[in-house]
Length: 421
Image (cartoon, rainbow, N blue to C red):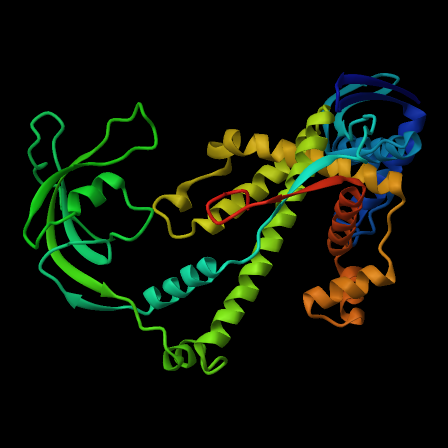
């Protein structure tokens, strides 16, 4: 047997495996035995046809069909002996038969080799924000707004109004309504920050029955914006609910009975949110620095798997959106690829740090995670035995905490107007 390994690219290898007829013979014998189980011939029961007769009748077909299985078995043996860190599924790219034997050419991906750079002593900024009265009041206002009542109004004279409008698209050349096009009805809440500023401005001070021309905003500057003739068909004044003890008891199902109790809970939740956002911000800085200082090629099968995961997450987040079911991963692959490559590169770096630090999941780690997940420790251990990805995730979190412990963290105070968190 001869084996020759060639490097094609940073993470791509190709091996040629040459087997002689004598080396192929044991493989062929096993193939005959497997084939025997399903062969029926006159005078013999199924599975009882003698091997010599099978060879005489079906040798060429059985041996040809066995070649891929032989290639797979020989490649697995080769990869084990050479301690290759194979990624994805190897591809059998060529089979060459000769009077003396068979040559297999197999292309495969491997984990990249790279030198782990400095990961201790990284400098990061930790945004620190304490909950202010204004933060709590903004959330109270949102709660009251979600429970608002409505009353008819003649004119829009502020932002606490809900307008129903009929939008008829105009022909770009004639500026006349497109014949046969059905008008689109929409409800617009003027307090919504996501509303097109042009539309908000045009609706100011309008009355029921008023009409105006509206040019829609576009995401692409090169895209021709659509023009509409907009008619206001209904106006409702939005009246936020009054923040009283009775209201608090109603919206919380009796969990809180006073406004101060709910304010206290809002403050607690906001502080937890700010702390979680701070944690994510610090981790993002750590990841950014390490990814930038470790440049190496990443295996395509890993990138491809992450692209599919990002695409699935994208579809779930946008479930129900027009046309979302018709999208396929290939149409958005170029958009997801940079993020996928970053994720894979970071995971490979992180795994090397876990190895360098000798990190492992301890009883204390399990107890802490069980508390966070609301599980008993035995339950979590059982889940970890059944699903190794859970232990991998805990180990990944431990690696990040370890890097942060080594980092130089500078606190930066932020206020409500800043977007650091």
